Amino acid sequence: MSNKDIYLVAYYHIKPKDPKRTKEAGYINNPANFDYDESINITRGLKTRDELNARVVLNLTKQQVTKNRFNDNKDFPSLLAHYQEGYPKYINPLLAQLYPEQTDATTNVHSEEEKTGS
Image 1 (cartoon, rainbow, N blue to C red):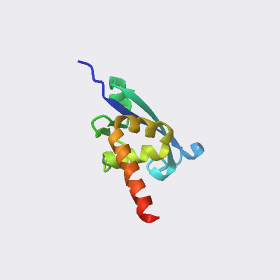
Image 2 (cartoon, rainbow, N blue to C red):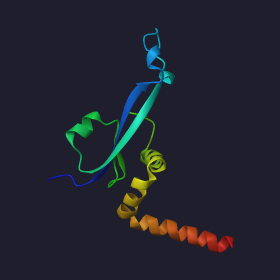
Image 3 (cartoon, helix red, strand yellow):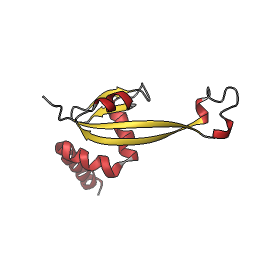
């Protein structure tokens, strides 16, 4: 049976901040000398390639972290918040479709706050 869960798959590519200095002794050992390029995919089902090469895999359907090799001390809500902040155009409509009850609850909470605040 195939997996129909929806996943957020994140890839990170490391590049030196100053490529001319990579030949200096100790340059590679200092994490402050590197930048990360981040790219994400939203996919239904998980491919072997994604499992092997991705640094972060979030199962959005089950709300769980499948893989996290970028920052080990993050849980599902904090990782999802990071991607929501960086990619709201893609993540927010998807989450509204996956969890319509939470969207309605959030809307109702804001409506009640506005009513009591006015």
